[in-house]
Amino acid sequence: MTQPSEKDVPVPRLCGDPVTCSLAQAAAGASLMVRELKAPADVAIRLRELGFCERQRVRVLSKHTHVICQVCNVRLGISKDLASMIVVEPAQPNARPRPQ
Image 1 (cartoon, one colour):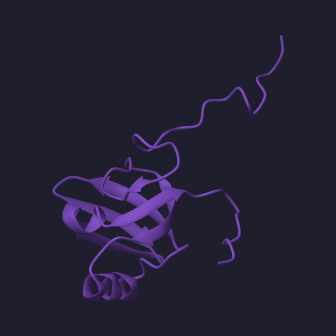
Image 2 (image 1 turned 90 degrees about the vertical axis):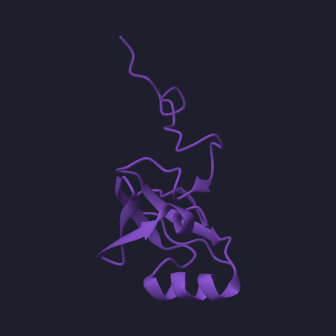
């Protein structure tokens, strides 16, 4: 019996787009990387101050009324409206940040 190759193993999808989605759409337990912030300038500045910077790793801990996630080794709860402004992609294990 042969083992399935990495190409045969289905990649888990976070949402409709196979590459990116908003943090509000991501599944609980997902390890992600912030790709961009689609927020007004003042909101984007505040999100960056909280640790939601581009190329930052984020883990979704739970989703109920708010999205609870771990960023910069701190647990934060943000509203689903704010989470919808954060575009994320699956984090590659042991991946280095991409140069800009």
